[in-house]
Image (tube, rainbow, N blue to C red; front, top):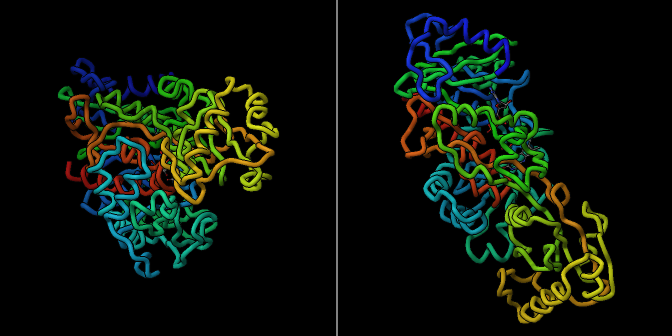
Length: 494
Ligand SMILES: Cc1cc2nc3c(=O)[nH]c(=O)nc-3n(C[C@H](O)[C@H](O)[C@H](O)COP(=O)(O)OP(=O)(O)OC[C@H]3O[C@@H](n4cnc5c(N)ncnc54)[C@H](O)[C@@H]3O)c2cc1C
């Protein structure tokens, strides 16, 4: 706690001295005592996609809304992102482009490609509502263009629709009918135009937007109800009474070394390029201070777009670790689960896909045994893995991970090469996924699963759709904005 903030709090809450404090509360001024500086119905902390969507919904319900943003600029990671929202089941853009999609196909793909342990009810709700969500955003000025992009990267210029997941990969095609679902907001950086549109919509309906105003602590009544928050404005405390509720939408904790050291341990050094300076962990800390439970704090959403082609991915024990044709997020998770280095091992046929790319070649040899020796792997381990893999791949099966044709084929033909995969190398984007435990309405829950009255959270501040962002690009932004709306409605209802 810094000096000016302490001083501000002492001044603001002098009248409250002697009040019984709820466990969460740094101080507990009571409405009517004149200790509050500002009164609103709904206070939203954070101005990314989650916060702005929450604010718009709360305002649409007739509430007065203040959005407080810690940084001088609005928009957070949402603004810096490419502006991809994963949505389907018949969105307006899908229909306009003649794409046949269903809620079930979208859900089945996400269940297959996301990590185990998904919140199925929340995922189902997202799949059922995402098409309407795209229409809602478009009504508020978000332009998703009118083009169908290439089957994979690069993103469609001028916005549009593309396959932002691995829906067309044979392993998933067999389980769910594929459809492009990556809705990209138009503009040189889609995230910036998305945020601009949401800011414009918020201003038009009378949401109050304040930058350089950082939420510091929640204020709760003795019975635990969250009454408001203390914010920091240039070193001065500002006490905001939120009569209906506070929505925490402060992003994740990529930039919070303390929380990362606690929850990520051996992965604490993995760079989280999707987080950046705005993911300070403060919203999560405030929620915990108010008695909230957290979930999945150890989870990272990581993409590993590795051009594996016919190669295999092995760990420092010389063993394969994943179906190499899985979605980029699933491959990323498998890599992060390893403690040591990993490599792509390729034969002559698979090598061209890796040459000249982002990965560094670590070794080359004329036999698998010599390659293993050059990498310092345990004696015989890589030879065993390759022999086992080759035996079944020759018959079109992969008993270990169910990799599918056409990339399933035996490794044969020197030279053999190994390309290093290490945190920071081969992982092209990552963010924290864990956060405050919420229900699908965005109500923050305590350790008993009971809602904390007056407190709501969304986006990376909450653990919502925590496993799914592995399955496709655009699920983090999509779920932040979608569940941000739920949180705003719930807060407005009080
Ligand atoms: C370069 C990049 C690429 C990405 N690519 C993808 C992708 O391909 N697929 C995908 O799904 N996701 C991607 N993401 C991630 C995605 O954009 C984010 O997860 C999502 O936008 C988070 O939204 P949010 O509203 O929860 O948080 P944010 O947009 O980060 O907003 C949180 C806001 O809260 C503010 N804040 C923090 N602390 C406080 C406080 N104490 N008081 C007040 N305000 C506070 C922050 O400054 C910030 O403005 C990418 C992100 C980046 C940056």
